[in-house]
Length: 193
Image (cartoon, rainbow, N blue to C red; front, side, top):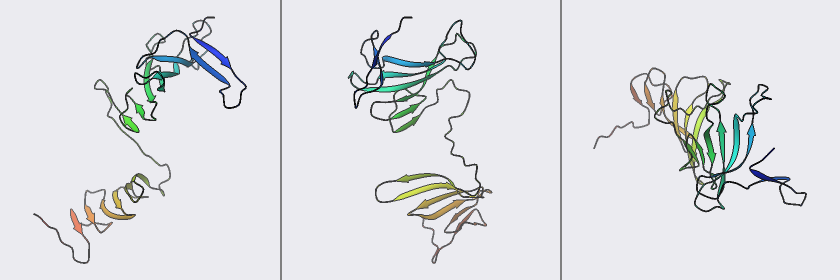
């Protein structure tokens, strides 16, 4: 059996127990290093094909900046090419659908896809919120789907400020708007400038 990596075992404190080192592919931005491959769930003792892998990858021109690529087999036949689907860059940025994530989490759907790009946050417990929270060190705000209600709520400084209910009515200062726009405050005022 020939391998494209060296297997180094270590028992030293602070060292990896198993280290895969590349001995074939040279350094270069985007070049893959050693990998851990996975076969299919079916027995494939004849061809021993790789259907998925986790691969080290150089993520800049600096060979010391290494991340991880997650590769899957999206094709319907065993000989279809493997494709990189997710990458963790050396700086911790995670890309799904992109190999050059520009943010902590970067989702990208190619133009050839037949499905919409979607980020889904779902709870099986209707008594709990599904929410996105944006926060810095001093304060936060949220976009929520309130529990047991088909609505969208907008929260700032831990207080709900606006709600859009299932029929499209918008409430500011109320969670039960009875018209297309309802303002509820001590002195409700709508300014146009």
